[in-house]
Length: 368
Image (cartoon, rainbow, N blue to C red; front, side):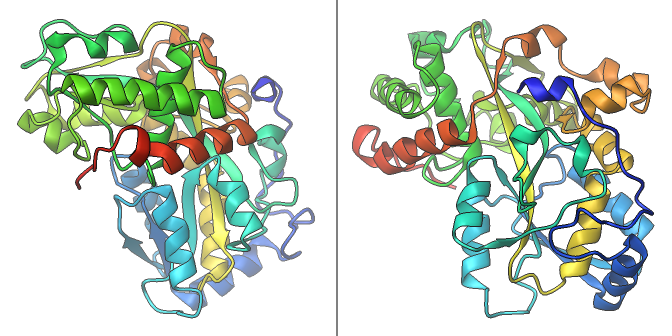
């Protein structure tokens, strides 16, 4: 993702959105229409994921006339797209206005006609390789795949992916969802494939599934959806997840149990999440206002506070727009120098293999 190093200057939120693929309204027009709509429906935004709790709260504070209806916080990316499909003729509270999905799901949603174009005011700040040229979706934040470890139960941390196959970690390792639907789980398997020397894409899907099959056969894989609660209870002492999620869980558990976050040796998988507006959004103007909020300095710093790197991160750091205390709390920069950013096509190829062949190769049913 070389373009993350060269970001263009932003456009004022008060300017006419001349580059907006959906309309040429001003922000004032959008805000007035959104307040008339009175509701924004989000989906799959856990409050401890990238600090979404505070980001949603700041949106409410800025626009008290708009009620935020939060659907299914623990849904996966595939679930979000299915929610759009299932509710395309429904303007009620189960129809999402906006989605936050893994990078590979953005082009899929566009191809299916599930999302509509909208270019935020800060569009030029977003690197070209993590946004759709026509404005249908745009990356907002990213992190790297890591391992969270319950130190009450695990004495010696795994330092590389291969360590997970050791007998020391029997009945200890878990994913954060069903790899047939969860972007985070799909990309954890991609990271495993990369650790075996595979190139991102179809090859990582195959090698990653072989790795998971070996873990399952050894009895080291726990087939439940892992989260902070299962870690605290000791059900899933080791979890593969984005570093920002693991750090947030560590903070929320407050040392009970103590949690350490390990970024494994070797190549580090970085994962971008993208934002989009449903093609059938019941509240399209509220959706646009939400997009403006999360791509604004306030929204982007909200992500940074949740240990996430953002689409506009380098530009904002260069301009002195990210508080030092937020920068100091981020994961060590060394791991990010090893980060690999798979392309949209590579992620899609990996996703097709993992979701399509999980049953045949691994065969474990991941329970909620």
